[in-house]
Image 1 (cartoon, rainbow, N blue to C red):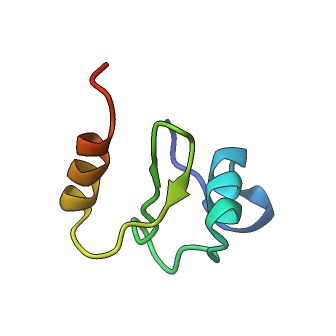
Image 2 (tube, rainbow, N blue to C red):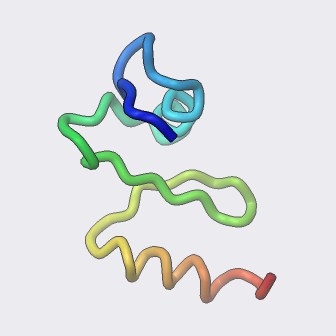
Amino acid sequence: MKLGSVKGKTAPDVWKALRDEVGDGNPTWNFSAKYLVDKNGQVSIPKGNVVKAIDALMEDGDEL
């Protein structure tokens, strides 16, 4: 991990892929973009409490 842009053409491919998968625009400020990826590779943007969204994904999944 290193400091870098998450906007536009200079964004790393992983950010571009996450953003494009959910049809979201560029983040408006630092840490505003949160993406969750489930065990099937589905990308989503959590609505509301992020911890609860993560817990919900964990409950639906199988134990590793």
